[in-house]
Amino acid sequence: MSKARTALAVAAMVLWVGAAQAADCRGETFDGEGYTVCEVDLTQDTVRLFLQHPQTGTPLGSFAAIEQLLRPEGKALAFAMNAGMYHADRRPVGLYVENGRELAPLVTREGPGNFGLLPNGVFCLRDGRADVIEARRFSEQRPACRDASQSGPMLVIEGALHPRFIENSDSRYIRNGVGTSPDGRRAWFVISDRAVNFHTFGRVFRDHLGAWQALYFDGKISKLYAPRLGRSDIGFAMGPMVGAVIDATAAVD
Image (tube, rainbow, N blue to C red; front, side, top):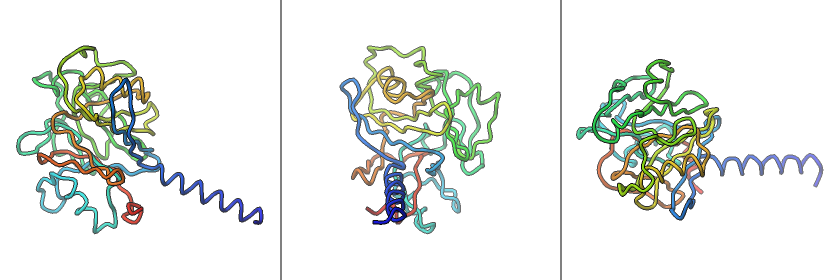
């Protein structure tokens, strides 16, 4: 094989490996507990939030509804999960922005439940980056997020666990959340295999993945859609959801 052909073959292999690793979901173990981790590079992967059908305004509610919405675009989901707390009618509890439109306002006051366990935060998507930003700091900075979802509590705040987490707490649920790197390039979407407490779940992001900031999405109703893992969780209809969007042809192995 000529040097030119060898170089082309190597380049093609690098591109194929890069594509295979994009929006990658995998099982991992930390401190004896299992998790599914979906990792994205925001400079390569497209991540979007989903709540309502853009024409009808009706809540999507399920991963299947997102797939149906994406199909005419020639797109599909690499993975998706629920992405924030919501009321009974599926309205977001806190800030929600989709494709530049604010559908629900930011909430900075303390309140009941996990959402009100301050500090809480905002998952903010901009071109080429994703950030978890503490809500009151977000209120001061007001970054121009293309998509954003507020939830709470924060799990990791600038490399430190939320100060109110208790190491041996017996409040355990299957939990999911998101963590981001300091440069905003990398994001990790994580769901626990079994019920864990906040302290344990926060340490997955800080000590195992090295996330600088991390935000809790929810427990009890936590669900994941990861077709390449053969996983499509079902249950209650959801409010905000987040997904990595790929070309439909790439979704077929």
